[in-house]
Length: 143
Ligand SMILES: Cc1cc2nc3c(=O)[nH]c(=O)nc-3n(C[C@H](O)[C@H](O)[C@H](O)COP(=O)(O)O)c2cc1C
Ligand SMILES: Nc1ncnc2c1ncn2[C@@H]1O[C@H](COP(=O)(O)OP(=O)(O)OP(=O)(O)O)[C@@H](O)[C@H]1O
Image 1: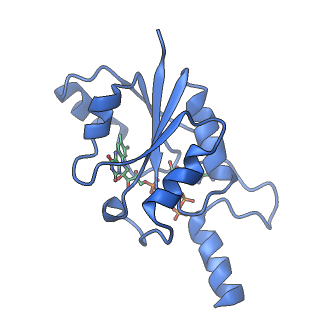
Image 2: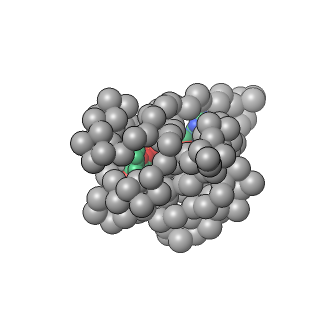
């Protein structure tokens, strides 16, 4: 019985923090599907720079990822119902409430565990394990 895991996020400019998250999510099961957020659904921070197709393709190229898909425009639970995962792995700082997700899954009759991955800290002061910090440094040095 294949144990399917779903991870999700914006993944605008990929960095080792994303790799850590996705490798940890992959280790929670046998297959990892990653839902890449549509720009229209990234409403809790600045919009991504790169188009969704490009963000999806880069995430999909990671060894830990079996398939990366662009998320649904309107209902974030549509891909969940289609994939019917055993685990949803939330990122360490992802703004979703674990219990709210679990309640919504239950109300839709989806039997799926909600877990939270750990964070990865920079290996040294020069590393930037955040898209926002990468963009800030670009603006600082190239702006
Ligand atoms: C269970 C789950 C399912 C999601 N499905 C979608 C989706 O179908 N379409 C989408 O645009 N975003 C989807 N998202 C991503 C959210 O829209 C949100 O933008 C994403 O969590 C961004 O988080 P980040 O700040 O970590 O990048 C989903 C998130 C979760 C937790
Ligand atoms: N340093 C990190 N360690 C572990 N997971 C991370 C790290 N950075 C991001 N993630 C996870 O990757 C997923 C996608 O995050 P996102 O695309 O928002 O990147 P981000 O670098 O956090 O962006 P921003 O800096 O703009 O918030 C989220 O689940 C998030 O928790």
